[in-house]
Structures are given as structure tokens and as C-alpha cells.
Image (tube, rainbow, N blue to C red; front, side, top):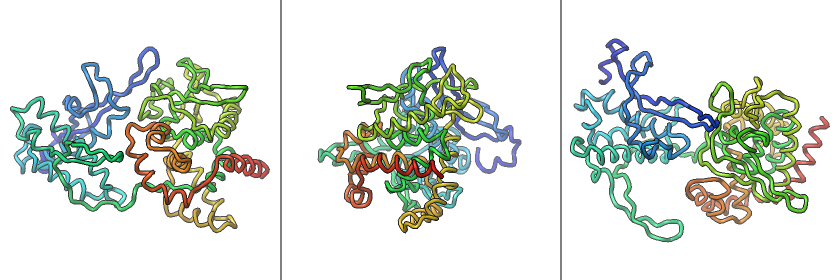
Length: 435
């Protein structure tokens, strides 16, 4: 199966693809199951391959997920299978995954690194490294199971390397023995920097122009949650148990936890709302509890004005009364930035605001900017790697380490106290309500 097959009947033209289904148990717990399948030229599934069993995304015979969203890993693997077997199989003499050799994998990695994306850019170096790690692990798992049939052996795929951890300790690791040559994006990723002065404007602006997601922005900015996780939050009256828990001492809220321990069915049409990357109970950072409570009370008043499915009691609701999906949340956030915040900044008499407004014309500010701002505040408050990892809800300390490496620049550019932020939110919010 290679490019020469394009002249064949579409029913005989096969490609590897990812197919996912979302199910829910009788108790409402929602889960996703993903497969690597073969599809014909019409996009119809011809065969389930079971290759996902070797992708490192499930454990045991019950196929318990090792991560919330297995699809990204499977897309990397399908990309390799399509490149080696489907597109170049005839030339390389490959008819089966067992025929793949180490040089073939090297060719794929270099091709992936050199391939231009639809937007005209190229993959980041970190993305290419992830692709290499995922595909190498996949081939190693196959080799462990079918070693006698495969042309590539596990010992060929890895090399031992001694690395120094951020703690200073030396550790020997087995890393993929591949180096891809590519045109890597120089950017560290999507534009996400937001000065705290702009955050002071955004929160009350959301209350006025996007009241349905204003509390979602608060969950991201003050509890560090991802946008998909925001869409999984339930109201306190949910049949699955309260989505938020409050601990009061002396009549004042001292601790808040958001329940992200499971994904539940939150819509009668069973459609996905968003993914929880790490299942946990997420706390609101103590310095932000007061402003968080203000936003929560605002949202409770908003919910009284809209219809929603009482059975599921989602925290965020779309125009049809169903639990809001990640895509709808992302779209509403983008509209808030582009239609209101950007214009307000451009028209400001403050040079700093005008400059940032111009930057928003040149860069797309995504929802992840809220989580980035939250992490910056943790760094500025002197939190160490372990605490940053805890408050962000990360599986590893790598992200925290990256932020701490740049602490000096963050302190110079973004220093602010929680009291000043809360005061500014209330003051500016009042001004906007009077417009």
C-alpha cells in the first residue's frame, strides 16, 4: 500500500487512523476508548488492528486508561504507519509492521520534522521529540511481544544516557537512539503572556460581556485549571456529588476544592465536554480565595437566569441548556478577547495597554494564557517546584522547572500582590457596570 495505490478503487485504498468512542457507566462515569483502525478511501472502518495495545495508553485486561486523552499518542503512531507502510511500503519492501527497520523510522522522524504544517509553520522541537519517544516506545513494546518476527530489536531503539536532574542528582536513562533534522519553530509556543494589569481588566470585562464563562476564566486564573477541565465542573447540587467543596473556619472560606477525580456524563446527548488531563481534587490557591468567591457568587446568580439539565447540573451551560463543550468555551473566550478586550486596550490612553492591544492583533491569545498567568503568580510568590506542580495539577515537575528557570524575568515584568489584584478587580468592575 503506497502512493501508487491512489488509482485504485477507494474501497481498496487503506490508511491507518484513530477511532474513539465515549461511553458512560450506569453511575454516570464517562470514559473514552481509542483504537488504531484501517479506513478505506471513503473513510469507512475496514478493520480494528489492536495496535493500540502496544502504545502504552492502557494497562491490564480491563484497558484501564493510563492517561485522560490517549489520542495524541495514537496519531503519532498512525503517522508513522502511514508513512512507512502505506505511502512508501512498496519502495521499502514493507507489507507489515514487523518489516519496519530502524533506518525506516529515522526517515519518518526526519520527514515529520521537515514537513510544513497547514498554517505554514513547522513543528516545535519538543513536539518532534515527543513523536520520537511515542513511536519508539510503540516499536519497543511490539518487539518485546513479537521479538522473533520483527526486524527491529528493542536494544537497537534505545541508548543509555546519564542526565543531571533539576535536583542535581545523576540518573541513567534509556532514551530513543534517534536524532531528527528539521526546521523547528523558534517560538516557545502559542502567545500566552498577559500582564496582571490586563488581567485586572479582563475579569470584570468577562462579567459584563461573557457572563456564561466568566467563572470559567476564574477557575483557570485562580485554580490553574485547563479549559477542558473547566467544562467538567459540576454544580454543588449534582447527582454525582458536589463539583466544589468549601471549608469554612470562623465563618470565612479557607479552602476550596474542585472535584476532577472522574469524568462524568454531563449531557443527555452523551457528547464530550472536555478532558481531564490529570484526575485529582484541585485546590484554589489561598491568595485568590476571596476574588474566587466573588466570581462564584456572580456565577450562581447567572445560573438562575438560564435553563440547564437538572439531572446533570453542569456548571457551564450553552445556549441550548446543555453542558458547555470545550470548543464552545474556547470560541467564547476568543470572542471576548478579540471583540472586547483588544478594542478596549487599543483605545486606551495608557501606552502599555495600547502596546499589548497591538500584540493581540498580531498574536492569538488562547485559553491557556489563564493557566500561564496563574503559574507566573505562583513563581512570584516564591513557591518551589513541588508546590508549583501540586497547584498546577501536573503529572511531572518539568513545567514547574521551566518557569523557575525564568523566574528573574518574571519578577521584573509581572510582580503584583493579591490584595492589589482584588482591589483592582472590584474597582474596575464597578466602573464597567456603570457604562
